[in-house]
Length: 427
Image 1 (tube, rainbow, N blue to C red):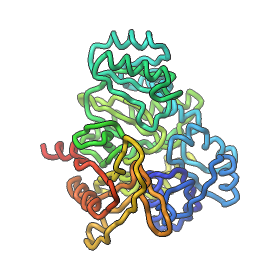
Image 2 (cartoon, rainbow, N blue to C red):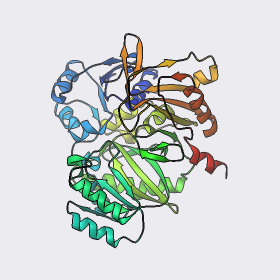
Image 3 (cartoon, one colour):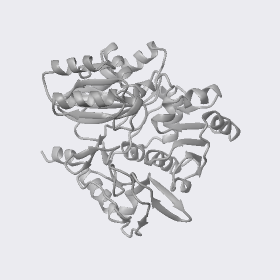
Image 4 (cartoon, rainbow, N blue to C red):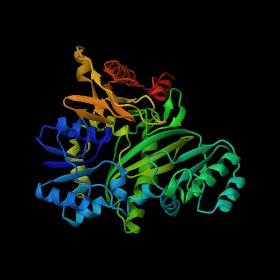
């Protein structure tokens, strides 16, 4: 197949890497890709989606896979479908599940999907009154629009919650993305990332993963796009998976059909498990990053086949197979992440002599550029070291062993990825 992948991060690199390892020979294109994706395929640079659709037709692209949320919210799927192209991802209408937190919360409420008590408003007084009525602290305040995973503030006092609302609604914090806010109760439990591959009617649930959002060890410091992840998590049992299918995924797919926006693509379910009950924190409409980097290699079913069947309403004909392994991904970030930009730095990867490490680990590249044959870290999350094993400890050891082989000025990473799972396993 000729396959086009939209995006430039580690998520898109990992999708391309998985497809490049399939038995069938595929030709892969990235738009725009990054400094390392040209080893997997060809990078192109056509930013206008209508022009890109014409290019896809001329180059006989059989399948387009959309990585990030921006193009989905902007309607790239609608444009490609209008050109009779096969594309995996939700329409602009369905992408509102991520594009507007208020829309998403109202869908959850309308279709009786378990979620935290909330108010959605553009009015300071309304928000303040709701905050005053809340019994427990902390309080969660969210900007309505897209904020690259950073528009959620957990306020530890009612005063802080009100100040946050004021900053968001005034446009100081997140510009137009904060013109409406969602204020909701804080749920105390453990958080999971669950992904459903959907074709509008049918779905396939992938193993639950756990992300590590904060920049520092022990979940300290500010939120980031994610500093590492692992899957599958031992914190989920068959009962929780069943509840997620029956109470969450099925009513969501049915509800989106009723709304006239059938959901196709990846439904990313942010779950908080409270006393054994899955409560929905949020929906996103694409793979999480770094979760994608571990889920792609854990799939035994060819990734291209899974996405193609998802894009052509044939998931009911697919028996999805997952490897009997664990994966751990550790993000290596640049010096000033997430506080500001960093100077570009040359990346050096030592030759790996350990055959076991070579076979059971790899790098997924994200924030990198290329000059000649040299890769440079260009800020933010630079790359992910991914390890696999028959248990979480082994997978984690391999991921960190690979981290030791990678060098660039100012590199930093968390040293405790998967700590919750290992604590749980140790019980």
